[in-house]
View 1 (cartoon, rainbow, N blue to C red):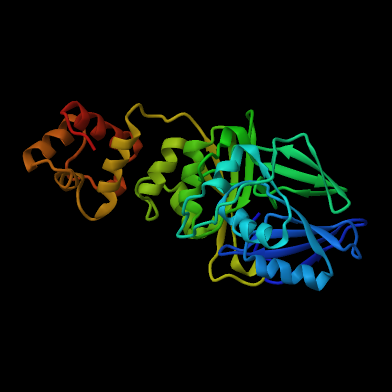
View 2: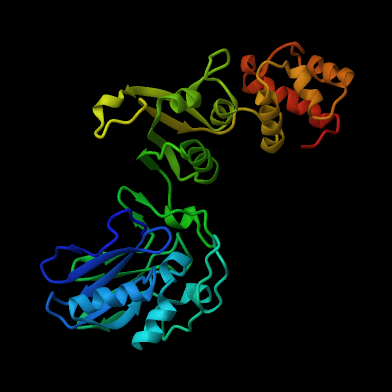
Length: 353
């Protein structure tokens, strides 16, 4: 579970287990050092996510040796230090059977190459792992990765990347699956979306996660205005059309910057989004190719936009007339139905995106 917490160890209080958290590796992934009590001389390392030297140094400071290495799943940021730590300490490696290939034959991810290692014990879920005087119950929790397991011991759950504070793990990595992570129907998402990725994140969720049937999200005010804008409004653009294709969106409340601490530079907005069946029957790939071209130069007419799709002037005029639209209309005045009409005409005439 990535965390921006602390670069050094942080103790997580508990009545029995002594748990140290280290944020390691290129994206600050959590690694845990778990002892039966603070005076214990053996520890279990969960998800060695960075250099083994850092982990071993902290263990030495605690007066403990590494008795076992538990891996929740095989994504690169959770296994970066496995080989080096296992080799240096002789500790057995417990690895989810469904993710074993990610450790045994790793591939380069984001420019990072993990050193291969053969696990000593393969875990499916349902087993009890005994190490360092602690009994860990292994739980199979797929969705973020096929073999993902969590380890539970004495009130502490080491959940890898399945659970986050107020959220669940991402599904844009190989082997991940939303339907497995969020089974059934009727899920609601309430979130303060990261402002720098709020638009692509929300659009991806609307397209790929049908189990979520309502959203309440906080976004930058300007972004919220773009999500809900209609033709003729200044904020109206390709994002507005994409949202309208998949959902009804409405700003519920504007949130001024001065209610936050520290105070951000921008105001925010709470936006309610309710997915619906697309109201137009047209190939979405073709539709959004037309939409993007139309908004590429906002001051140009749709007739000119079609010429940039490869049509000559006469063909562009014919398509607009056949679609029942004024060739001089601009994209900012055209609704979803109008874009769909143009797309249908283009496809009928043999155009392909």
